[in-house]
Length: 271
Ligand code: DGL
View 1 (cartoon, rainbow, N blue to C red):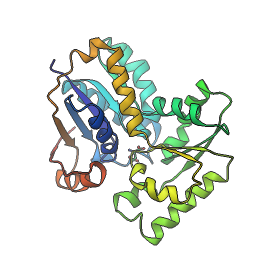
View 2: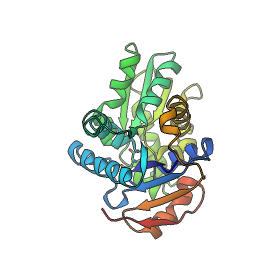
View 3: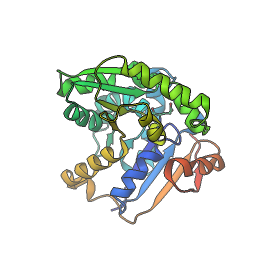
C-alpha cells in the first residue's frame, strides 16, 4: 500500500477534476502534476501533446503513481489512446492510465433524447474528433456537433469571463453550437469550463443538459477501483495530496483557489 493516484493536466484546470475525485474518494493519496510551463496544450499539435503527455505519465510512474488520470481533455483526446495501445502494452507492467473522455461520452449518449449532442472544447480537442468517435462507437444514431472555444481558457484564467468581452465570447460560441442542430445535451469538454457553467447556462435553454466532467470521472474512478482489487490494494490511503507544477509555484498556488476552492502549496518540478 505505497502507491498514489497521479492526476495530470496541462496546467491548473485539472484541479476541477481533482476536486470532485477528492470529494468522492477522500481516503486515497494523490499527486497532482500541472505542466504550467508548457500550457496551454489546446493549441498544440498531436505530436507535441503526445510527447508532453507521455513524458508526464512516465514521470508520475517514477513518482510511485501506478494509476494515472489524465484530467486534461486535450491530452486525453490527443495522446491517451496511443499511450494505452503502445507505451503501456510494451511496458507490460501493472500500471494504468485513464482519461476523461470515455466516461462522459457514454453518459451523454444515454441522456440525449433528440439524439443531438454538443461538444465544447479547445481547438485541439475539437480537431481530434475524439468525442464524436467515442460517442458514435456506443451510440451510432447520435449526431455530434462540435464547437471550439479558443477564447474561454484565457478568459477564465484571467478571470475576465464576467466582463462585457467575456460575456460576448461565451454567448458567441454557445450560439454557434446551438445553430448546428436540435441539441439537448452539451458536454463541457475542458477542465476550465465548469468554472463558467453558470454563465453558460444563461445562454442555453433550460431543457438542455449541461454536463461537467468532474463528478462523472470521479464516479467512474470509484467504479474502476471496485472492479480492480489488484490496483486498489496497492494504493495508499492516508488522504494526502501533493501538488507539482513545472513553472512558478506561487502563481499556481494563487490560481488554485479559483479551480479548487482553496489555496494550495505546490512545488516546482523540473523535467
Ligand atoms: N486542460 C485543457 C483541457 O482540458 C485546457 C487548457 C489547455 O489548453 O491546456 O483541454
